[in-house]
Length: 175
Image 1 (cartoon, rainbow, N blue to C red):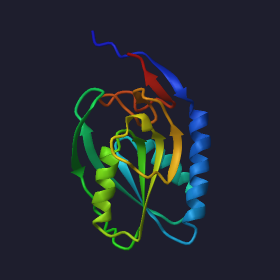
Image 2 (tube, rainbow, N blue to C red; image 1 turned 180 degrees about the horizontal axis):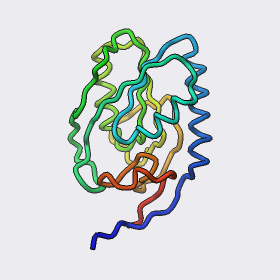
Image 3 (cartoon, helix red, strand yellow; image 1 turned 90 degrees about the vertical axis):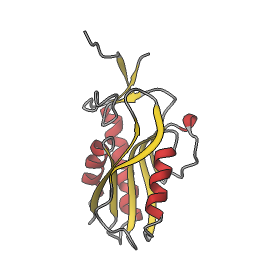
Image 4 (cartoon, one colour; image 1 turned 60 degrees about the vertical axis):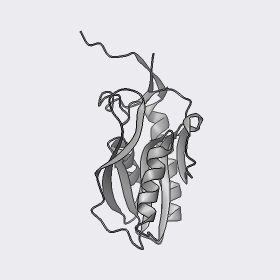
């Protein structure tokens, strides 16, 4: 029988909602006279991005890309692949990347470089969670939800082999 690992709540859905509202208010203020393009990195960012844009209350456009740096399991492969690229031109656009987590920084750095080559007017990063203890590449985060310790997180879009994404809270998997 395939039993799932135990998990416990690290950040409650109420704490997440409060932080999402705060981030949306900051974004709304910074982009008040603009129509930003928000690019979500799939699959992990979809819940965070959906909740975030509901609170931004500005004209905005939404795009998704899909990158992969994980095979199966809990360790990044370190090899980043674009599984689904941009469909929207970003030249001279105000672009805000939406991430679920910045961990080693390799995937996020790769994607930000990918976008910079397309010459956006501005490029910023919003992440729900940041795990600086695992950083291998420096990444500038403009809008940060939570700084977390070096634990494997699931829930609220974060997964382990496609499991646990639907948990309403952010949880830590037990070893």
